[in-house]
Image (cartoon, rainbow, N blue to C red; front, side, top):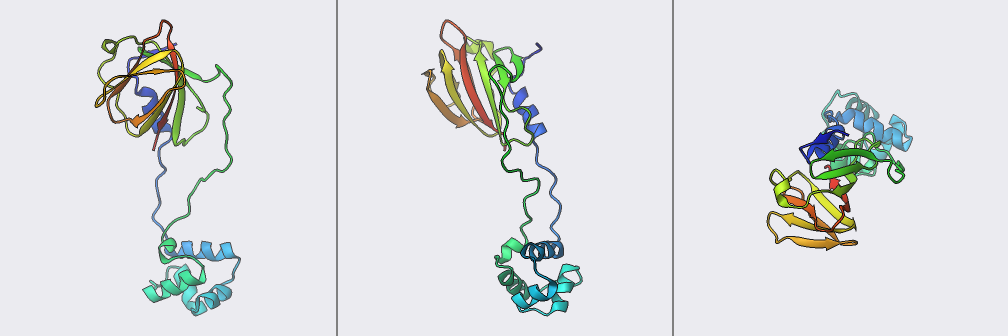
Length: 208
């Protein structure tokens, strides 16, 4: 098992794997055509619904004319949406119902000097959250190379043992099994075990 000296590495790697796709500029004509087809309407039906000439709607869809605001308003009303929604692209790669089940001990293990991490749901790409279990090996703040900081927010839940949560702006907090904390990841933070055995905690870090 390789040991990393950087406890932020798994968060950085997770963000690189789950980065946002490049957003293409919105084509109004294509957007209008997609909305019309979503209703199952022909050009004639959509034009009649919007109170526009068929030729006008055809030119809009083919990018041959820039519609006036009045035409956009009529078009939006005919398509049963608001004007801003004409310029809001649909979400791409939207997945519904996806799930990842990780049996106990079957997560992806990554060790650091101060923690032993077990990454959960590692098989899911483009995650909004990074869940992982951690065995807290550190016993003092001196074992850390300064504060851990990263973008996003973080949730900590103590599974076993007793830990002490150190943060940049608050007094240290002793936490036992069942205790939890939610905090800003950009605020310096470190966790040490103050029990005889290594403590176990669950961490969930936002990636967006």
